[in-house]
Image (tube, rainbow, N blue to C red; front, top):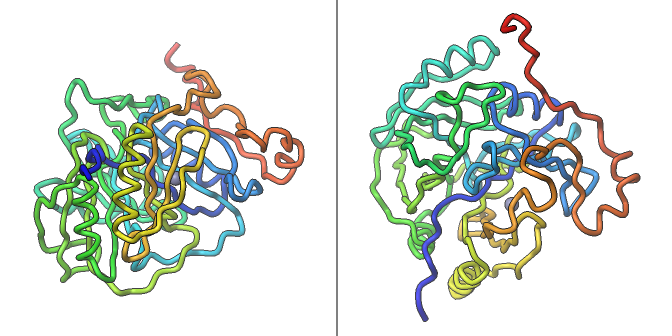
Length: 329
Ligand code: ZN
């Protein structure tokens, strides 16, 4: 059997959060991402599902959350994505540090990792996040959303995820079968000093890295932790080939599930991290025009007929908008 087409990289990362308004305020107003979809958790429609991305919801840019005011606090540990990293243009970390100072966001001292500069911080739920300076070329596929952060400083999609795994070796092999290349190991800093960080690289350019750190410290799913990470399998055929490979590895992938904006296959990798394979089509503009993305609660398929009941069970939220700058007139 032929090998599956290599994944180009990450598609989206989905996390658990606490208060929905706090979640929107931080990811839109502080980090400057666009809310491209307001929906509900398709497995639990009493919980919102927010999607924050670049201006067009380009694959490899969307960070999504299931926010619930009563979500218990989670703990990052083995079998999870321990940290999610975003790309920012070279030389912009000064801007981000002063922005964080103004917004009262604490951050750590910058570190160097695989020759790149990294700024680590947490979102209001304690979710570990980082910004990594990269060279952004003229033809970069991401489209910055400039309502809160100027274009030249804006986040440009995912850089990487870091996985904490009890037994990394089988996952190293899995990542290589998914088409990522082992590009080296270095002493880890910032997360778990003393351990070795091994980097895997996809074709990219967005969301092209997966880093693996061995750890046995126990985690607990809850607010401030990642629920799953999705990889791009652009077409149904590519997804099915990847699914077949995963199945041969003994990892019991789900069948294809229609997630309305993409079609998905789920499986847990060897150390328990929930992986998803997501198609490119149909994308976030399948049910809202580009200019209106995220403006209203979208209820896919069967949920639309229950709109009144679903809306009644969700807290009101306000999407932040920039203050109209009268001084500019
Ligand atoms: Zn997902």
